[in-house]
Length: 182
Image (tube, rainbow, N blue to C red; front, side, top):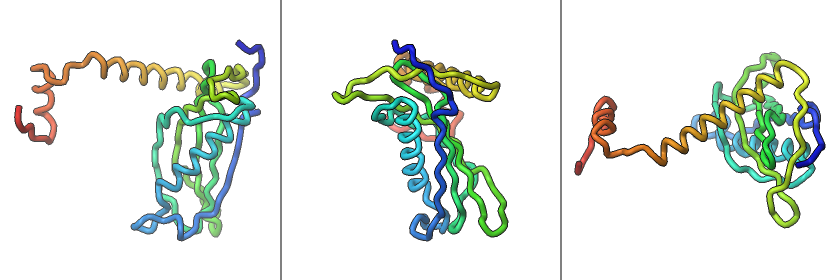
């Protein structure tokens, strides 16, 4: 394990981009897929800057679209490393859109990407440890621990849950579904 530690501040990346008509979906709002592409780019840049290595996206853990983004708004994405494992990092990203005429800023998206550092042979490589410098950084790190725990619980539940048990089938009746061929 590496003895190298880096601050959260050393990982911070900010990008801004003006939203153009070519970025819209059929309803005239900025397409979520376009925002996801930008999120992946900033997560890569943040993880690579922090680790000093090429990084790949292991998972997109959370993407919460909170408010639509309009054509002509200036979108700013702020990313930082919130958690480090051995070769993995969880990158937190905040997306804000600013109406450049009025100056009004709205929070549009919060996302968490798990990135993994790779060496020249595409093998996982140890990343620096993380120096937590304030309460907010500690809070974010602890939230990532919870996120990882929830992911493990979900995976374990998937492995052991009997979907065809009498209890499971009874539970399904409380949902707006129709079971056929059972």
